[in-house]
Image (cartoon, rainbow, N blue to C red):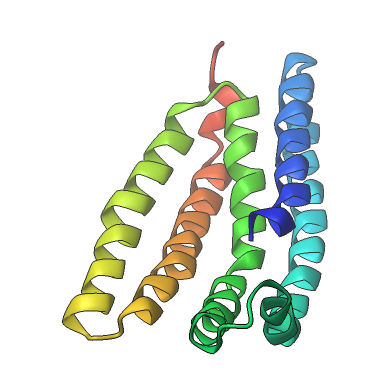
Length: 166
C-alpha cells in the first residue's frame, strides 16, 4: 500500500512547496489553484492504482505468499483499502497544503480526530461488536480517510490557511 502511495506523497510535498512559495510571493489565488491542480494529478494517479489493485489483488498476493489463508485475507484487505485511494490522494495533498501555508494545527487536529475518534473506534466496533473481524478493521481505514478528506476539503475551502502568519 505504501509503495503505491509514494508518488502521491511526493505530489503532496510539491503542493506544500507551491503553497509556501506562492503565499510568500503574495499570490494567494495561485497558491489555491496549485493545490487543486496537484490534487487532480493525485486523483488521476491514485485512481489508476485503485483500479490496478482492485483487478490485480489476487495475482499480487500470489507473488508474496502461497499460503491460501493469508492470501485470501490479504486480497480482501487490498481490495477494501484500495477503495479509498482517491480520497487518500486528495487528503494528502490538501493536508500538506496547510503545512506549506504554515498552518500545522489543522493537519494535526484532522489526523488526531480522524484516527483516534473515527478509525480506531470504528475498527474496534466493526471487528468486535459486529463480528466482522479483520474485515471490519479493513473497512474502518477507507471510511476514516474519506471522512478526514471531506473535513479537509471543507476546511481548505474556508480559507483560514491563507491568513496564517509565520
